[in-house]
Length: 255
View: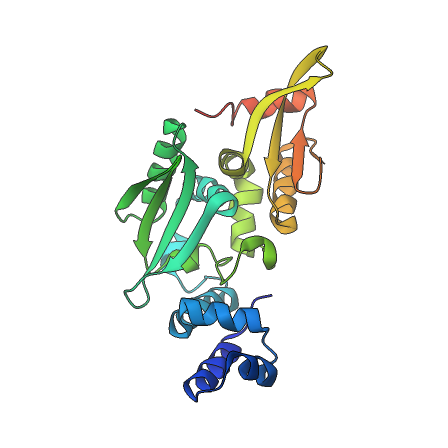
């Protein structure tokens, strides 16, 4: 659940008054674990991030000129990457946010494509940080919460994720294939499904713990004309021969 700024401000004032975590939770109704998380992150930082999110939600990011002029194809692709394995965090500089996309270090072509799309969506410097087994592609800007109003405190699968109307127009109406490309390249794969060792066939699989993000994937498939079906609690599969062949034209194996 995403808490409004008023809750965070109330928690902050009570903590400053010297109340314990338990007492703050009792008086405000905010779970004690959430209070502890806000203390760890710093309530001031949480407030700035929450207000940026509220501004984007209330205004539909329409007040941001950069949203109205965003390069649509690169944005749809980057949105898929962000929904899969991306996050936005507040930096030590007031009002400045960092977008980070985590990618497998083996797929250098995907890393390069992500870097190029991020630089086109907001023309700031894009950096790559090497981590064990993966890399993080990142960029700093005050406008990332405008570009991705799904940003909020907490993990995506623990809060509602819904596209704004302008995002739906770009990613689902105009460029659903690029949205799917980003989703698969971040949280999916193309592999072989083997049946009892007797025969095998290619399929695509997308895995995400968020019901809402899986729903976005299913809707994008529907817009393209691809049949996708749930496969387990967190997975969606595309396995029909014609559908796999169609998806191969705009996704393909990871490289």
